[in-house]
Length: 525
Image: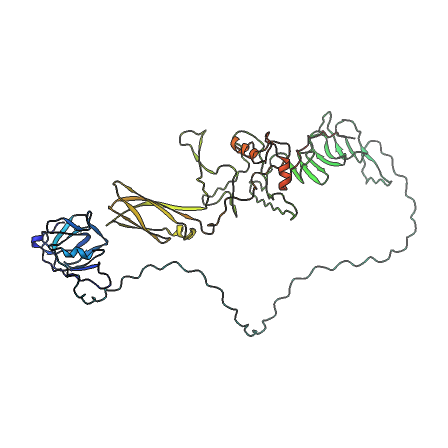
């Protein structure tokens, strides 16, 4: 829009308030839009004082911007020109040039200022109060007040129902033994059985009896109970697959597959399943299934370390001893799209990378892994695209970002797109971000914060991730060569990558001996 200055009717007065001699108040009235034949309405975005020949006097160069723009309604408006030196008005023939929101000239008209030595005019009436700004964030909770006096005791309530019956008391001491009765008559001699069928109960009364059914050879159906080396054993014809309960060399074995394949072994208080010499209280060689027939079940593992134990406490250790290939230590799965396959109630850490896995769109044998971005803080961020209007834009901070981020430590980046423009941040807070610029350009923004409660996170901590556990065995085959060499350089490993026992002793780390070779268990009859 462009107004014809020859048809422009307006009045212009200039007041110099005593409180700021370089702030100029200019009221406008009667501005006519000749294109529509009515009073002009629109938004003024820039101003510039020029001399009678059109040369800029103030500011020199680009026009000054109204921030925000000045709205003209029905030909009237009030302009505040800030930062105008008083010596500008020593000149005559000055004109005021105004521009609207698309950068075009609205009008240019003459005006004059009072002499700087004149008497200031009276202060104008106060303008109407602006709208109430948004509520600020809630302040911190004040300290708890003193505890009030205890109120009077209320009336006693009705008696509750009787509680459950308590446990039975301990059994009293046994009474004195009665006198021995007379000896009964001697019974008939028992039969001697050598084949055939026993139809009555068979009772053997003698100290330390040996009861043998069949023979001790590999005949079909052979069973023997209570010989000098075993509790119970059964063999099949010509097969080394004894089934039974064995005791030998201070150990107890339960087997269904022969003497070389014991299913369960108990050795010095430790239990082995598929393992003759358990290395821990429970040593299972093979897969473990927990749950019902559909595979559903819960597993809870608790760990408590004595205060004198300086070793790292692990509630659960999962170790896959494969040294190559796509092998996994733990696989956790949930079938719920809103569930969590693995939840860490506390900090989580990884000595390797952390990544998400995406299917390859064209190759079923491949997958895509993107590695997480890592830094020295627990960071939060949001990003987006905005546009300046009248050199001004406001970014409203999302509610979820406000709820999880600290109010301090915020940073933001803005980048103009589509055209050159100088952009800057006027203000930055958890409520909103105000962006200013020299052109009405579109821009991208990227805002970073720090997670609430983690502003004091320390990156250098005690070593708990790189502690070897077994002496004499190379450590860290899952790590890149550079990491293993770093562990050699800081003294955790020897040059052959086995644990440095001097370092472990100095730091109080407990190293275990390697598991011994599995000896053969000889079955004894």
